[in-house]
Amino acid sequence: MANYVLYKGLDEEKRKLSVVNAALKRHLATQRTRREEAEEKTNEWQKKYEEQQKTIQELQEELEKVKKQRDTYRDMVFKANRRKDVTNEQEALFGSQPKKKQGGQFGHKGYGRKSPVRIDTFLHVFANQCPTCNGKLNRSRATVIHTVEDIPALQKQQTIVTRYEVERQWCKTCKKETSVTPDGVIPGSRLGLNVLMQVLIWKYLCRLPLNIIVTMLKTTYDLHVSCGTLVLFLRKTSQYFGKPYHQILKEVRAAPVKHADETGWRVNGINNWCWAFLKEDAVYYTIEETRGKGVPERILKNCHPEDVLVRDDYAGYKKLPFVHQSCWAHMLRESHKEVTQKTASVEMKQLHQQLKLLYLNLREETAKPFIKEQRQKIYNELLAQLLSISNTVFTAEDAQRIQHRIDSQNKNLLTALLYENVPLTNNIAERVIRPMVVTRKISGGSRSNNGAKIHAINMSIIKTLQMKKKPLPQTLSKLILHQAAL
Image 1 (cartoon, rainbow, N blue to C red):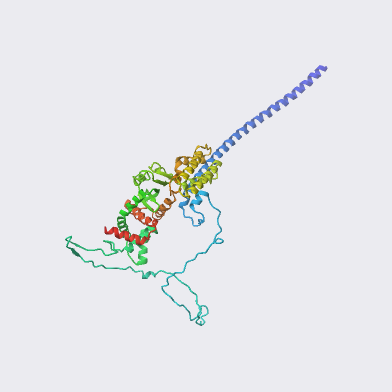
Image 2: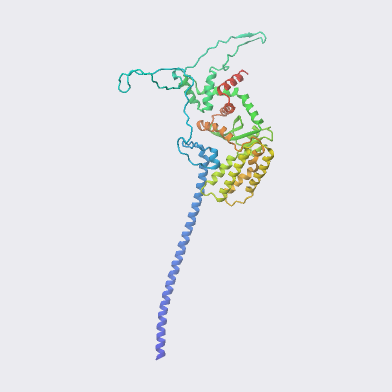
């Protein structure tokens, strides 16, 4: 009986355990199902997260490209509030400087318009009645001096018309009839020399379109001309300037240090290129259909191989048979763009500091008197620093891009140490080609290849006279009259 009770108790306990076990199995199965569902959801969220991270990365890369494009074209946009206390070169090399307080600085000497030395008219002014209450005013010996400098009234600016009666004379020696050209008169032209000077100044210095020049001549001098007349005028001028234009090319070729730069130019809506080849006081412009290396090869042919060509890192100059000096402003500008990005690496920041220090050392040494032995020693030291940068293994892409630029230019960055009077930057070429850029923005370029050639010739002559610091109207007048008489 006791065993029966014992077995019955065990059966009851077994049944309870079976029920608990079954409940636990069902609970375990439920938990496994929930876990699998949770894992599936986790995998889905993980995939979505990875896709979002990939999208964010792509957007960041696209944003950096847009920023680089913005920085590239930033200087092409007029900035009315641009600070004048920081030059473009300083900003490119060392970044923006602390903003100065507006207005005159402490200790700054004020400047105002000086009173004219020559007085053409003297007027004594007084009133009989008060302008406020119309009361009677007494005369006084006390005066206030006020000097006004003005231009003649527009209605008085009439053209000067001169009729020449030129004798038809017979030369007994030549056995033919001849007639002389009056002094100061352009042969075959019904417009005077002063009109041509005014048109050249307005067109090439003030960069005014021809229709505006027509309006100004009519308004200011009551002189009626058409745009076609001005085109013929400028074409005739370019013919007079033909020989001086080729003489400028000879000067540039003979210069021991020469510069080159190029910019876009449109001819009848088609992309062309305006090239500028120059020395310290002369510039030769030419507008070509291509930006290829054949243009500088043709323009600078037969030059001495020891001449120094200062240029940017455009590949079209790379194989020219000269000693090259690469522009440091371009190098540091590209380095500055990389280092100012939000994603700039530590390696890039360190590399930028090395380049700035290297440039400062170069600028300090090239400012000293030229002593070849000392320059050669400094050259070897700085070349070792450049080679060290080239041999450094960079892992960051931005540092690798600047390193590639350094590798491609290499010794060309140090040429100024070994040659006298060689600048470290190509800024003179940038400044000389700037008027062509402004003209392109105003007029859109030229309407024909002949018009582009005329513009290049006339602009070369006028800009060269400016660089030589010669009085422009007088020199142009003598040059035109001399060439027209030939």
